[in-house]
Length: 228
Ligand code: CA
Image (tube, rainbow, N blue to C red; front, side, top):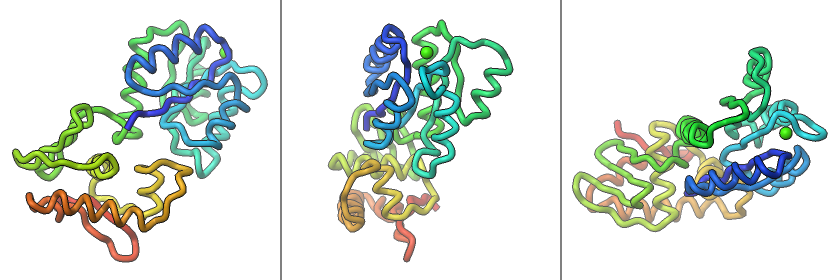
């Protein structure tokens, strides 16, 4: 799954540089030039990460970060603040407003990309391209490959994303609606029983290697990936 990064930056040259680097790294970049523009995108679909400039015309980046953190729907979106300010107090204010990380201009695109990857790995591991291993299964998003104790498992794209999400969030119970948000995407209008259909397909694909038992049904709650 390609992470969609919303870049909120009012200077066109920096916006362009950021979008270029983000695309080069294999992510998708969406552009907004102020807080209102950012909300229009966010209302349409939740981004996987927001790169947020501090100094924006109208509402500032810090105000936008606070608003995002105060709203149930947007509170978990990872945010990296981008700013020319280097004063220590400003950095603290940026982080206190809810940013996950902070980078000052002028920035090195390589460092910024490394930070984006680090924040995504920490906050949205299912967006990372790194191989994950759990309970004898090994899943490589980059190669779109699943190895079950030496046996390659063939999965459709949705089952693959579902398993990737489970493997990066083991031992926790997720309701059908949470799985829809996380795996299908927010604002996607599909019925909850769609989740059951794909869970069934995932189990069927894992059954020959007996790994289907890792996908557990938790009655009345949803599903859990458990290695115990
Ligand atoms: Ca600016």
